[in-house]
Every structure is written in structure tokens, then in C-alpha cells.
Image (cartoon, rainbow, N blue to C red):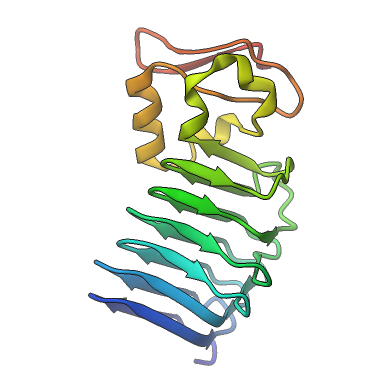
Amino acid sequence: SGTGSIGLDAGREVFVQSVSTGGQGGIGIVSRTADVHVIRSLHTAAGPINVVAGQSVSLDGTAVVRSVSGDVALTATYQDFVQHAGSLIDSGFGRVRIHAGFDAQIGVVRSSNLSRFRITATAGNHLNDGGNSHRNVLDAQLNSRLDQLNQASLSRLSILAGFPSPLESLKKRNEAVVSIDSAPITEAKIDANGAIVLSGAD
């Protein structure tokens, strides 16, 4: 589309082949009630890439979601986010935000953003990040055992990153599983004002 923004708002399932734009132009793909399948590529220069599905988001093994410097946000509102082997998410100097209402399966994700929170993922049930400890992830399923804190690769920013469902889940359970880098945290609780207090964090 040259340097303009591209938007698709569909009521049903969406299959994306190749979409590209330059300049400050962004890409927005929305399926209000169903799934979004990225088959080939989504590419921007400085603009953001936003994919929102009412149900699930999947990236085929041939899919490449890439921006030179724009943020990339992929949201599966009620179901799974699945990044199949062979696919790539690369936000360049932008940040990556992934959210799944249920399970999230994450593959190769890259960002050269200077923030230590350049890649953040959340899942309402279970998150499989391929054992990559450099990601900042929040997994609701890990909340039940505070003695597992050192095994989690989580961050404060993940909790506050604007994903209301996991945050509300944490508040209702009055406990959280978090780890800042390698610093152990022995307790995470909700204070009288509803804030999440992380003992042992700087």
C-alpha cells in the first residue's frame, strides 16, 4: 500500500497471505468473532502491527511478522495463540506483546528494543515459551505455588503491561508468581489497596 496504513475488520475467520506497507503506515487485522491465521507475511517499516482475534491467532510455519521499528501486538482474546515451528516474529527496534486468553505457544521472537521488557507474553491458562528465559512472561497457571518462584521467568512489567484478564486473575487469587532477572522472590501478595506487592524485589 505504499506508505499508508492497512486495516481489515472482519466478523469471521481471517486468512492472511502477504501484507506490507512502508513509512509510518501500520497494519491492523481483526476478526471479531473467530480466528486469524497468518499464512505468509506481515511487514511494516516504522508502523505498528496489530492482530486481534475474537478466538485464536495462529502463525503458520511459513509466517513472518516483521517490523523495522514498530511495535507488534498479537492478541487471541478467548482462545490460543500458536506460533508454529519455522515462523518468526521480529519487531526490529519495536516491542512485542503477545496475549492468549487460554494457552500460548511461542516460537522464535526477536526484538532489538533497548527495554529489558521488549518481549512480553501473557496467557490465561498455560504459556510455553520454549524454555527461553530471556522473555518476560506471565503464566496464570503458575500462580498456585509460591515455592516455584525461582523457576518462573516473569516480570513486574508483565503484570502491569495492560492485559486486564491476567491481572484480574492475579488480584482474585491474591497471589502471584514473579521473578525479576535472577533475584528470588519469596512472597507476592495483594495489599489493602489492591496493589501487587513483591517481597524481595528491588
